[in-house]
Image 1 (cartoon, rainbow, N blue to C red):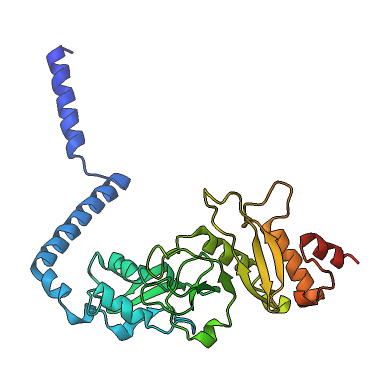
Image 2 (tube, helix red, strand yellow):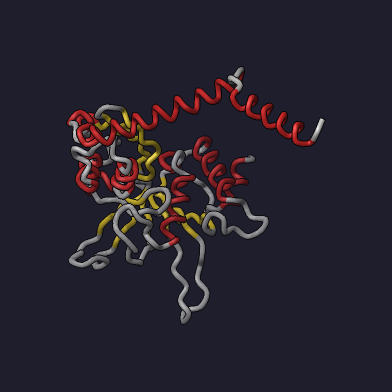
Length: 302
């Protein structure tokens, strides 16, 4: 066979292969591609014609009574949901808005009582679910008069377990029920919902949290924080002290995580105090002149 005839035969074979009907998986794949393309073009065309009508439809407008938010606990007096709606301009917001998720997260995230926005779920056509983790006061920072402008009286400011300042929505009798933190002489670094800015507040709050389940049994009243070391004063006592209801001072030691090598950790010390509370009760009833970690250990092994 001549080269020309051979080339012609190959060309005919290739054309025949190109026009041969598709079969099996190849046919299915091609049909799927064509179908998706048709659907996409049709959807785009319909949206161009009717999209504005759909977006502006009242049925997609968020109604405040359809905003399902984690119920706020009793210690919060302000209306967290209403404040978030006002701040984020969420009233009548459109559930089809692609930025609504971010707007809702920001609106609730800046509320001082909200610790974390856990989940946001759209429920079409006009409802929204928002799961929140709220901040809880664990202690009251004693604030001497003069700390704030026009603050000519002693006061209490609530903080959570991370040392974040919380809104002062409780009255004095309610605030007196919480553990106190004494010795803070610093001005808060920000507004409510933000860290106090003084590590001693966060460290004291952490100690309170560790002892929370035994606080009443031990009849504790407050925590005294160490002074801030001054360049001109020299070394200072860096220990935290537990103060009982009868004003007995009990050394806790350094802040959690700052213990000397070989010393009991904060968790171990908290466990010891809890055990004492369960077995002996109030620390004021301790019959030794000095109360510390070592003497508590000895009293429990008798």
